[in-house]
Length: 162
Image (cartoon, rainbow, N blue to C red; front, side, top):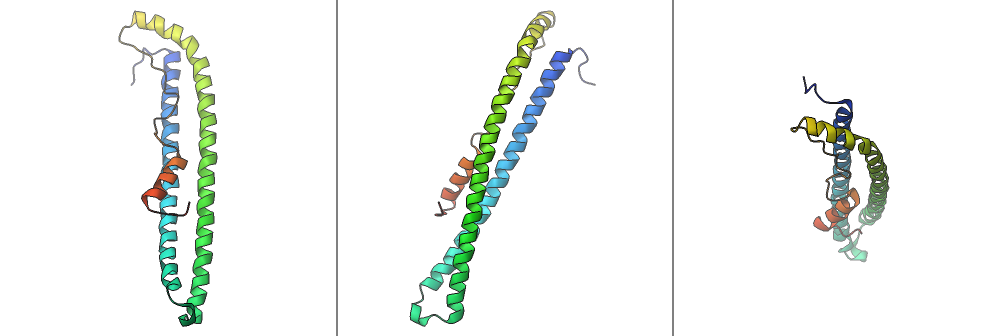
């Protein structure tokens, strides 16, 4: 079993740290899912655009009726995929703003919660020198938000949608 000499306040602090880490991991998973979806959409759009360019290269008077229909289909598919990607980017921005609000609320909560704990841990540290209470990080250590990652992705895949 874990150390049984921990005070209830220290246990609560440890639980808050673990919960915060879990939130950071869930957010990172969400960002990675956004990135995967964006990469796939960019790839699909680029493939369709390549096919469309091949059809557009054919002189208009030499095109068959099926080629003209395919050209129209490709334009419609590209349009739908671009709309889908726009929605994805908008969704990522909404998620980023929600996470910022959650971070602010968590920081406020921890500031209030840790003030009384500082007094308890200072007295327990003087009695047990090996114990140290570290406040949980107030922000996740993920370097970029989902939106920034998505925008970077498009530059990396040479997607010229944006």
